[in-house]
Amino acid sequence: MQYLIIKSEIRALINALAKELLISEDEVIKIAVTEYAQKYRSTKDILSYAGILNNDEADEMLYNINNSRIDK
Image 1 (cartoon, rainbow, N blue to C red):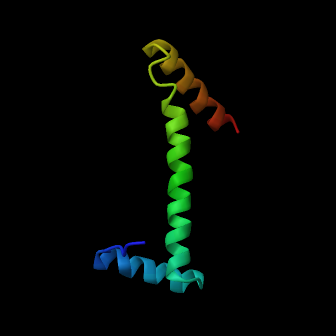
Image 2 (spheres, rainbow, N blue to C red):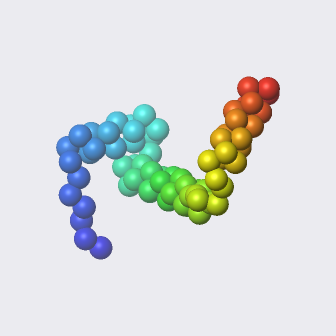
Protein backbone atom coordinates (compact mmCIF):
# COMPACT_ATOMS: atom_id res chain seq x y z
CA MET A 1 0.00 0.00 0.00
CA GLN A 2 1.22 3.49 -0.77
CA TYR A 3 1.69 6.13 1.88
CA LEU A 4 -0.75 9.00 2.03
CA ILE A 5 0.41 12.59 2.06
CA ILE A 6 -1.66 14.34 4.72
CA LYS A 7 -1.74 18.09 5.25
CA SER A 8 -0.43 19.27 8.59
CA GLU A 9 -3.85 20.56 9.68
CA ILE A 10 -5.46 17.17 9.08
CA ARG A 11 -2.54 15.40 10.75
CA ALA A 12 -2.98 17.61 13.83
CA LEU A 13 -6.71 16.86 13.90
CA ILE A 14 -6.11 13.11 13.65
CA ASN A 15 -3.53 13.33 16.42
CA ALA A 16 -5.86 15.34 18.67
CA LEU A 17 -8.72 12.89 18.12
CA ALA A 18 -6.47 9.93 18.85
CA LYS A 19 -5.35 11.48 22.13
CA GLU A 20 -8.89 12.47 23.13
CA LEU A 21 -10.36 9.06 22.29
CA LEU A 22 -7.34 7.12 23.59
CA ILE A 23 -6.96 5.19 20.33
CA SER A 24 -4.29 5.03 17.65
CA GLU A 25 -4.15 7.44 14.73
CA ASP A 26 -4.70 4.46 12.41
CA GLU A 27 -7.90 3.63 14.29
CA VAL A 28 -9.10 7.26 13.96
CA ILE A 29 -8.61 7.09 10.20
CA LYS A 30 -10.28 3.67 9.96
CA ILE A 31 -13.32 4.88 11.91
CA ALA A 32 -13.55 8.08 9.87
CA VAL A 33 -13.41 6.25 6.55
CA THR A 34 -15.98 3.68 7.70
CA GLU A 35 -18.37 6.40 8.91
CA TYR A 36 -17.94 8.33 5.65
CA ALA A 37 -18.63 5.21 3.58
CA GLN A 38 -21.82 4.49 5.54
CA LYS A 39 -22.99 8.09 5.16
CA TYR A 40 -22.17 8.01 1.43
CA ARG A 41 -24.19 4.82 0.97
CA SER A 42 -27.17 6.33 2.81
CA THR A 43 -27.00 9.51 0.73
CA LYS A 44 -26.69 7.49 -2.46
CA ASP A 45 -29.78 5.46 -1.50
CA ILE A 46 -31.76 8.64 -0.82
CA LEU A 47 -30.61 10.29 -4.05
CA SER A 48 -31.79 7.29 -6.05
CA TYR A 49 -35.31 8.65 -5.45
CA ALA A 50 -34.45 12.08 -6.88
CA GLY A 51 -36.68 13.04 -9.76
CA ILE A 52 -39.42 10.54 -8.94
CA LEU A 53 -41.64 13.15 -7.28
CA ASN A 54 -42.90 16.34 -8.83
CA ASN A 55 -42.39 19.62 -6.94
CA ASP A 56 -45.80 19.55 -5.23
CA GLU A 57 -45.34 15.97 -4.03
CA ALA A 58 -41.84 16.72 -2.78
CA ASP A 59 -43.04 19.85 -0.95
CA GLU A 60 -45.86 17.88 0.67
CA MET A 61 -43.47 15.13 1.76
CA LEU A 62 -41.06 17.68 3.23
CA TYR A 63 -43.93 19.42 5.02
CA ASN A 64 -45.09 16.10 6.52
CA ILE A 65 -41.58 15.18 7.63
CA ASN A 66 -41.07 18.54 9.31
CA ASN A 67 -44.44 18.35 11.06
CA SER A 68 -43.85 14.82 12.32
CA ARG A 69 -40.50 15.90 13.78
CA ILE A 70 -42.11 18.85 15.58
CA ASP A 71 -44.95 16.73 16.98
CA LYS A 72 -42.59 14.35 18.76
